Length: 416
Ligand code: ASP
Ligand code: MG
Image (cartoon, rainbow, N blue to C red):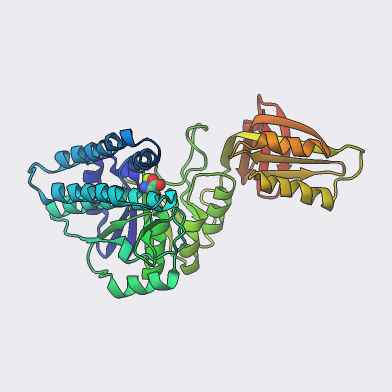
């Protein structure tokens, strides 16, 4: 049993859908469950539908029509015959969506969000399933809402593992090619819930866990997990093998690898995760598994731009001790600052943060009442795992160094 996940970018148009078929034909699809996200930027487009529903009713039908036209164009590219059942099925989803918006009385944004946003995945999987059937890749469309059960924490639902395990084991026939929706689940009242944006990887991990799958493969538009983000670094290299812990470390420092939430169920059952290119499906990609030493052993670079470096010292040269530090952290927590690096000495304390919610002004106001404060905005934080001197030089050259911290495996440098 293997689980494949195809993200929105892999099915952003008819060519992408055809490529899914070609990947399956090339690598085999015996005992396979495919988890698919919404096509291209559909989730964002549906977010606009929801926003308009609440704020700007006059634009609502245009927003829905955009989503409809986008999918209809893909349908037309995939099926020569306009009478193909796929057209009808997709039209039905839009009828359902319109009916929901018409009768809904709930003012709960998060509830409405999940009921609407789910159509992205319901539609994408229906189109792909119908297309695969049409080219004789016979498959079974699985409604994930009947398999993944969650609480009612809309937009960030928590999986009810017992119920989910029970439903998946009792009702999924694993000896056929199955295709299901990423990102979605349902609550005790059978309303749609979602697992958080970009949640489809997690869906693949949930199924793999419950099915004791042999592996999960995430198909991407990159060759695998790279040692650096190619947008910022030249010569990014493929990592052939990494351990779960290394992947979690890399994610912690800000690498857009795999979310720890996705890795956790896989790690518990030691199910390897492959990240491969949907353009080169036979290439090996990256394997993430237990105790796998990093291969090759090369420095891994992570950059976070637009960070804020705050340095504090006491007003009277007294030491910065537990009491002040706990006060500082209370404020950081209160203003939802994501702390990246901490450094302290006897009379000073520096912290590099990500001001995700634009609270810096208020935070500084509070800090200035108690400390001497210097603040550098718009700094870059570079983290190098498995650093070498050469790698450090590469980062530091030509930049003003504001803070540096070395541990055995990791160096962090804040630059301007
Ligand atoms: N379609 C959802 C999103 O864009 C889930 C996913 O892509 O993983 O967030
Ligand atoms: Mg997506």
